[in-house]
Each structure stands twice: as structure tokens, then as C-alpha cells.
Length: 262
Image (cartoon, rainbow, N blue to C red; front, side, top):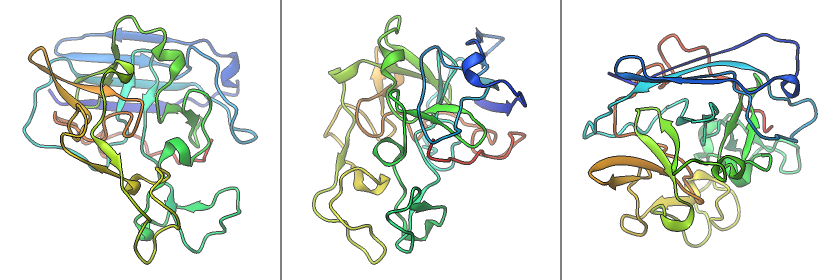
């Protein structure tokens, strides 16, 4: 069965700080479903003035027995995965370098993709101590490793990916195969400076340079699994199993919320 992701923001007046963390994980039939209100079980913030965590109505159902399809989905996935604590993984951003934008502005990025330089969340946008922030609907989500969650794992299982495969975390014991490119950025619309990780395009996959494949996964005891890593890409950004249209931005999922730099 394919992966399924749907989430609907609740319209509530109460701020997130007054809400309790709610979570339920079930395995109906051949699916595994994580239901949560999107409130993390740790402290959050701060970001820009007025940005708060709002309760959500997350329903994240994935194949409980995923299979490698032999093909890779690497475009347009809305949610990379969901943690066992019910918080979405969204490593990508909607922000792009714009040579015409004011570099001294609070938001020097725009939604204009023409430069080809996509802002990386960790190091590029405003995050709290858990490498997370909220989008325009107050949905709290992780762009990088949340230490408050990792230090309380029961084992290594951290999350489930959008295709149902497990996401594990073992700290520095396993390394991604993405490396920073050398030298200065090049191209007519390129940002000035060296490849320092501010942009997704500062990174490249170098097969064999680490332990993992291009989707941040590998075989373990005869089964494929993804890993969360301390360095880019942090979480899988492509998928080897089936991902439905809902997770790809189609289906009945509501319109994608807008990133707002926290």
C-alpha cells in the first residue's frame, strides 16, 4: 500500500504554549498511522515576533511493510517523515536567493526560483534550539536534528519516512555521502562567496564518501532503512518506496503552508 499524508490545521485561539502534547500511533491493517496535535514535548522558540506553535490535526499513515520500488522519488515531497513524537520533518524550504533582493533586509530571500539557489533551512533560516520553526499556519516542524528528541530515544528509531521506511539516528556513528563543493559559487545568478552550506546547491552527493546512499539510507540486517544525520541532508530528501500524490502535493491535502522564517 502506498504512503499517505494528510494534515489539517485547526482554527484555535489558544496559543501553543497552553496546549498539551497529544499523540497516538496505531497499525490498522497494513498501515502505520501517527496521529498528533503537532505540539512538541519539549520547549520551543523563539523566532520572529508573533510566531507561535499552533495545534494541528496531523494524520500520517504509511505502509507498514514498505518495499524498494527500484526507482527514486526526489521532487515535491511535502513531508519527509513524521517523528515518533508526532512532529513533521520538512528539511526543504520555499526560499530562494534573489540577486535583486535587499541583502540587509529581514528576509533577503524570495519565492523567485530563477537564480537556481535554494536556501537551506539549517544555517539559512531562523530556527530554535531544536533546528525547527513554524510555518505560516503555525505548524512546528524540524529542518535538522532535534537534540531534545534524540537524547530521549528508546533505541535508534526516530521517525517514519513518507514511504514507510524507518528513519534511525545513531549520531556520528554513520555519515551521509553529501559533501560541500569546493571553491567559489559560480554562475550569473549565484550568490557571492564559497560553498558554505547556506544553499542546497552548495552540497553534492559523492558516492562512497560516506556510509549512505543519495536518499540517506542503506541496508541493515537485510532491510533498507533511512538515517537522520548530523550533517546535510539531515533527513531523507528522496524516497525508494511508494509515495502517494498526497505526500507529493496532490490528492486531498490542503494547500501547502508558506514558510515564514520562524
